[in-house]
Length: 146
Image (cartoon, rainbow, N blue to C red; front, side, top):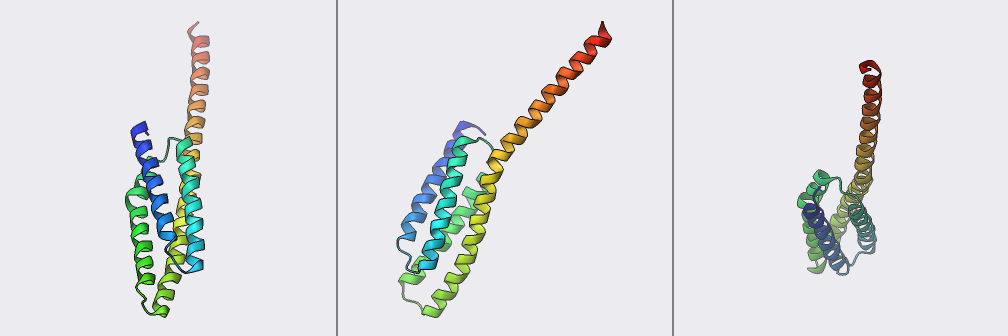
C-alpha cells in the first residue's frame, strides 16, 4: 500500500472515531452506549495497527468506503429515533437490533485488525523462503557448473 493510501485510511479512521464519539454522547440507552464504547475501542486498536502495518488495502477500502458510512448512518438514525420520542417499545426493539449489529461490526474490526499484521508476516515469510530457495539453487548450480 502506498503512503498516500495509508494516510487516507488513517484519516478516514480518525474521522469515523470522532463521529462515533459525538453520536455516542447523544445516545440515551446505556447498553447502546456501552456497545459503542466497544466499537470505539476496536476502531482505535485498528487505527493503531494500520499505523504500524502497510497491508490490508482491500479490507480497509471496503471497511471505510462501505461499512463505516453505513454504520454511521444507522447509529445516527437510532440517535434520531431516541431523540424524537418515538414509541419506547419501538426504540427498544431497534436498539436491540442495533446492539446485535454492533457486535458484528466489532467482530469485523477485530478480524481486520488480526489480518493486517498477518499479511505482512506471511509476505515476509514467503520472501524469506524464496531467498532461501534461491541461495540453495545458486549453491547447487555452482556445484554442477564447476
